[in-house]
Length: 276
Length: 303
Image (cartoon, rainbow over all chains, first blue to last red; front, side, top):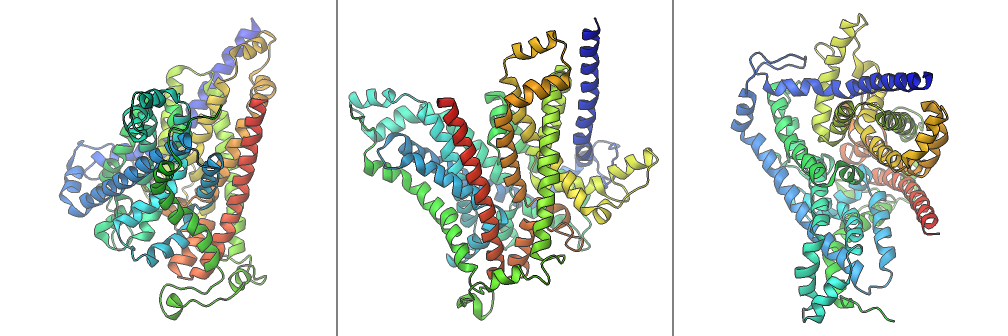
């Protein structure tokens, strides 16, 4: 009997402790749930009275704010196309062709990409982009993101492709398909779930990033939302709270939507393992 | 039998080209370029921008200058601050809190589990500028939620970002990154056959005994993986910049922020590159250690 009692108390104790930790994680975000809908929002926590969408109207009338979102979209989509396309082709080649040393290649690239990271990597990358004359261009941001994300993307996709029996393409080729046809018509449809994972992962990474566009871009009309958001502070450094809160929510929506999509489609543990 | 190749060597090479060019230009070239630049006095403007001079080890010597090494705003101070930051926010904060959550979530009601996971993961997936802004509001002296709670509890208000900037970024980074450890340990625990725990229950083991004698030993490999990964990420994380910009008076200037300031605020690319080389060498040690551990683990599975 006492054993069940103690199990029961453990369960209650754990529930209380979990709830407390949950509150600790929720607290900094509570303000952010209400402020976008409060036309008089300040930094203090307040229930909007009345609930209003006027902050969102302000955002949609602000061409600069909208351009920031558009630039984020442009850079994310551009990066995703290069990462998705480049990684699919490369990992297919690594899996199916007789390139010497192909098992080592993925690991070495992965090693490089985890070493050349963060602001330390931005010093030489800035100088290289500067040397190419590409400072303050979208393509520079897109290519730098793509280069950094490709090794991990290739690693994830190679796992996918290695898991697909070679006989799929072999039978297509016996039936007369060329290797390129076998890739596009047979292998690609089977690899698609893996490509979706890589694309979503790359999109979320680029969409949320601050450092790379912050360093590589100069003119305000090219800034993505993550950098443009800092123009919603007054000269004195005080934020225009109403605008910022609504903008932050709009800017977060794609990430939340993609997260829900992935956890619905693949279960969230999958997504968890591959961020960053 | 020789295996028949689906792609010829030429086709394979062609397929590799787009990724190869991008990785070559923006991952591999920077690694070597930064080493070269660290031996020069390259600046952004002026004479040394176009014709940087070779200065030997001067940049490294200035970083390790014994007179100013530990002064605030210098390399040594930043390095020690970063070590403390990694220790407190990643190894203690994220890993311990993630482990605690993962363990407790096994035995709490489903709805509470869902809800807790949702907020912990939200802290992790939302864009960093949004998170920084939410924390800026949370910590505000006059109106912030935290001081509102302090008032309600009858505790003194704090000007957190001015009085305890280092502990703010430690708690901030713990809050931001715990989700990864939680999810990793969560999936590790759920891979343990439930019968192990049931047997322990029958023997009357407490939760702590089950954790110490069954749970922890069986997921030891995952713990090592987790510790190395979060150490590497925290060592390179730039997000605290969005909350404190390295201040006040350099008190939160961890290495990624220090590198940024030297290279992109003071425009001393040579010195910034030298810091970059040291940071990358430290990254390399962690990454090699990680690969070695990962290989040992797969080897064990195969054997």
